[in-house]
Length: 451
Image (tube, rainbow, N blue to C red; front, top):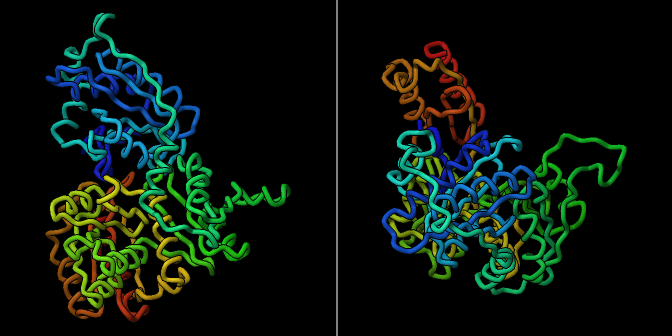
C-alpha cells in the first residue's frame, strides 16, 4: 500500500502523523512535479482547517513550494470542497488542503487537488511520493533566490464559495428552520453564513451539553446531540458536517438519522423529475443498501456500482458521465456543480427540495423502504489476506446463503483494512432473525479458518 496516498481519498493525498519536515518536502515535491516542463511559474493554493497545528504545517508546506520555484497562495480556513472549487476558479495548478487525517483529530494530513479540483493520476502521485520519501530527492533542490516563488494571500475564498452555492440553490429558504453541527469542521467558517444567506433560520448546535448546563459532562457525539436537539427546538431538520466538509449527516424533524442512501434516493427522484439526472443513472459503491437499489428500480432509475472507496465512485461517474453519486456515509457528489462531495451543498439542496415539495424530511426519506441489515467485522491473520477467497468452506457457505435469500436480500463479504486486516460481512433481507443467523454463521466460520 502507498505510504503517502490513501485508497479512500477521492480528492487527494493523505499523510498520517504529518511532521513539519515531511510537510515541507511534500510542498517542495508537489511544486517540482506539478511545474514539470511548464514555462510559466506554477501557483499552488494552500487551504487548511482551524486547528493550531495547521498554521505550522501551512508555513512548512509554503516554504517547500516557494523553495521549488512555485507561488504559494494561502486562502486560510475554508472547507475542502470550497478549496477544490477555488482551485479551478482561480486558475491554480494545484491545491493542498491541510486537515485532520482519519478519525484521530490530533493526526494531521494533506489532500492534493488537481487544477480541476479532483485527484491527480497515480503517475503524478508516485512521482511526488518518491521525492518526499527520498527516492530521487536530490533532484528537488531549492532554487536560487531570484527563482524562488512568492507567498501570496487571498482572503475572499469563503465569501466567494458562499455566493457560488447560493447561485446553485436559487430557491429562497425562508420559513425553514435548520440546526447545524460543525464545531469540529472546516464548515464552521461558512455554514451559518451560507444557510442564512439562503434565507433559512439557523440554530448552531452547542459544542457540548455543558453549554446548556456547566455541571453536565457528556461523551455523546455531535450527531447524537443533534438527534435530540432538532425535535427539541422545532427544527425542520439538522445537519452535521465532517471535518473537511465533504460529507453531510442529516437528521429529520423527529430526530431520526437520514443516511446517504436515503439522501441519494431523494436527490435521484428530484433530478429525474427535473430532467437533470444525466444518463438516468446514479453511481454508488457496493456497500449501499438494497433498499436504494429497489427504490431506483421502482422509479426507473439505473444504479451503477463502483469499488468501496469513494474515489472509485467519482471515477465511475466521470467514466459514465453521470451527474449524481455518493455513498451511505453521506458523501454526495453533484458532479455538474462540484468536482468532489460537498456536505453544505447537499444540505442546501435537501432544504430546497423540502421547500418546493412542501414535504417533511421524514416523508421524503420514507419513500425509500430500507431492509434490515447486519454488519459484522471479523479480524483475520494478515497472512490470510486475499487467500480466504479461495477457501471453499467460506465461499460455499456465502453462496448457499445468497441463494437462499434470492432477490429478497443479498450477502456481501469483502476484505477491508484498518489497523489490522478484517473481513466485513454484510447481509440484508426482510427477516431480521434469519439474516442475523446467517451473518453469525459466516462470521464464525471465517474466524475459525482465518483468525
